Length: 261
Image 1 (cartoon, rainbow, N blue to C red):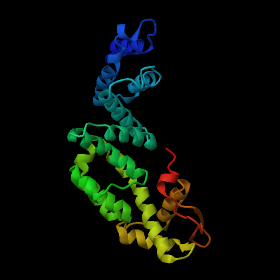
Image 2 (image 1 turned 90 degrees about the vertical axis):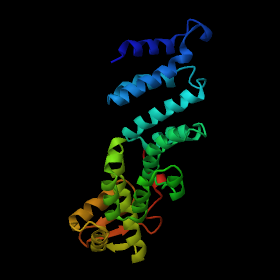
Image 3 (image 1 turned 180 degrees about the vertical axis):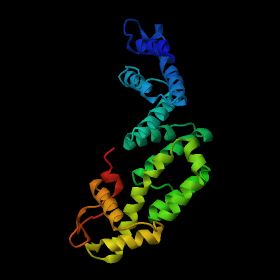
Image 4 (image 1 turned 120 degrees about the horizontal axis):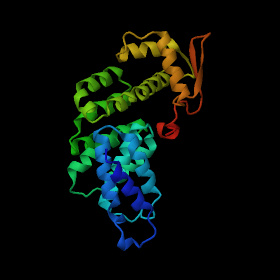
């Protein structure tokens, strides 16, 4: 591992004894980005942390070239995604996408591979137009399944595109969308029932119809408990009456308003 290079970079970033023109600090972000590539390649993401800390505390933070800053934001955004810091990841990756050269379609494509799952976890589904424009059909049915609460379609499309998703290390991230699909399915059940007192059996029926044929009432209770814990549903379960009691106001708050990260 290139620890001497890491030490050199950190020293350059904190070097305040000479003028900026006489040091090599301007090149440090390019070197940092090269180290990021290595660390991601060998799956040593914790080694990125001191570099991120050094760059973010550097007096040059806002004065590096835009191209190198875009690359930096891309890597830091990906690391935040793997750390389940999805809001932070979305901010960094969105910056990278928005500031990428307009003609750099391949780079924009790669950024979207990570930005799309993160945005979906925050409740923002990509449009079919965007996915078509950037040649990302793998996400079309994912977004459709999550929006509809279609568990059968979600499982099928994750399996169909498994090689692609695993290659880019986003398969486990996309699996986190299942809880959002459950939330959307249960919201549909609630709207159809037109009452704030909903039998748990109604959710069991909906799950079986949606593709979870082996589900039972115990699993329904676990899913609902998880949804309530994450604040995706406002309410509580009455185990005695086997009902979900949802809030009469905003029982299913917008995902973007409840995501903690």
